[in-house]
Length: 202
Image 1: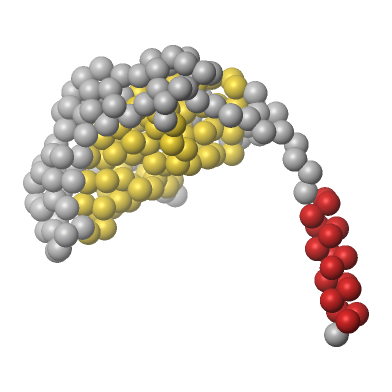
Image 2 (image 1 turned 30 degrees about the vertical axis):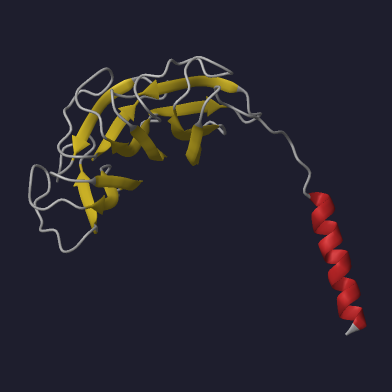
């Protein structure tokens, strides 16, 4: 038993010593930034995805548009900032999920309470909706879509399908209305939407 404890001690000590920090970075303005997803990119860098209520302060170079805005930061393998982008309407826009697409771009997915305003190109369908934005590899918007019913719909996750389309998953309190074609069974239900590579519902 003693020999086993000694071996365990040396094993744990070796593992602790071998975990050296390579670098650390902070990104943000003077108010609140919420990181909800991080993506390893095909160029060995990373994209940090979340929401921000800060204006042009700290190392945030984008102005605040409404309440919370989508905010993404592209960094290289050393943690150096390459570019950053903000997207939002007049209401609250909370980014929850990001994936890299087959063309090297990105798909942002989150929840928006904004009507058509500023970066938001479609009116809200209800209280809150799924809001997705397709970017190219430089962070330039290619298209965006808003999906929702008459009440609260909140996107949690986006994944790539084998056909090049995307699956959007979240929760919904909406009944049959607008984009929601299935009944509401209780308070909140799972709600999934399959879209093609151009954002059209399948």
